[in-house]
Length: 557
Image (cartoon, rainbow, N blue to C red; front, side, top):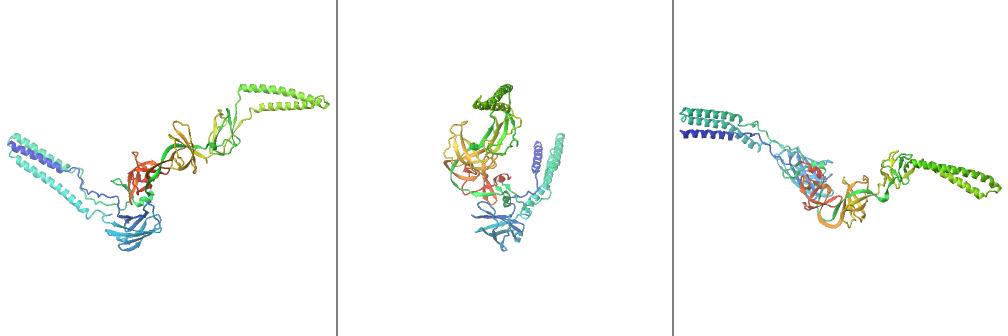
């Protein structure tokens, strides 16, 4: 009797295991949407050495985007003749937009072979392409509905059959359990097992499809009308031509050749030493404005203009000494005046020589001048004048301010004569070609003016004169100086605008693979000049590289 009872228990466990395995908890029978590729709408593309053309089906209208192959620049005013399934047709020109062609034959699904004859700027080219409109822009019926319906019916059949299988297994178990339940003890065990199985069956029926939705299967649709830029699983970026026009993407074909190596140096803008100067106080004193007031920052001034007055303060001992000198001079003036009066009385009679009379007059005049100068000492300030012509670059004096000796009151700079001082850790020979780049990307052409012979903080100062327009530059502004040396390196020169730096610090550029696909390429670069960098690895010649709009491509997700 033990063996049939053990067999019954094993059968119960097996049935419970089968029920648990067939429950497929969390399964979802709703039809999954189809994987949509980047080219969401029916389109075709073709290219030649001169042109790149993309045709996009929008309902019963064909949108045509025509660009230059090398630069990705839109071609305006071209003539496009098309061989269509209904005969030859000409695309309509829309300024600033895609070329358009009425195409009622696009209403029927199928594959359409088209031949485009493009004429622009004296260049004629023939571009064939194929547009496949099957399976675009409609619910996935037809081929897509059959697998979904088959899966749905299979799942429903499994749901119906599962309780039947469990019930049949339970009945068989009970029938096998009756012969072995002869003793009271085994009858109790059998009753407990039956109750457990009934409980498991009810529970499984309630949770067999937890989280499952058996609603009507929804057809998956393709959003053919949404042209969105997106990053693809392989790392490439799909950008429709319409979005490329918004981004303003431009490319250029690369070529490899030897270039002279450049050295990147830190620098800052300094004034020309012959066109700048300081207005300083020679002695300590109190500042006072001129009749027109203190000149403001940026005010043009000419050489010799009075910018401020400086009144030196008088100490108590100086005042005492000055008063003593004034008293002595007043006494001497009184004595000389009485002497002069006596001589003027005696001179007509010849008692006093006329020369002595004239000497006395001159002596009196000198004493009065010395006395007047002492009176004017506390009232005549020192005039501070501009040493050169230019603008007031620095200085904020305040009326009544006490200026210390050698204090800089104003800094005068000629804004049209600016230099750049760069610091190099090694002597540079052949600096006839140099340029600078500001923080906002402005390029400046430089002319070498001289190098220091003494080190300054373990570096050599080098002076360059700015030859380009200096509007917007300021003294003290930091720049990056690129000095061309005589060493040469082989590489590919690309504009700095094509270079993008990733979050990990890696530099990369975008390669234009085809009409609407771009692939980031990691590169190793060195500075070349103010506008370009030299790609030493990661890029091959004759590659279309994005030179404008690379930052916008980097933000596409």
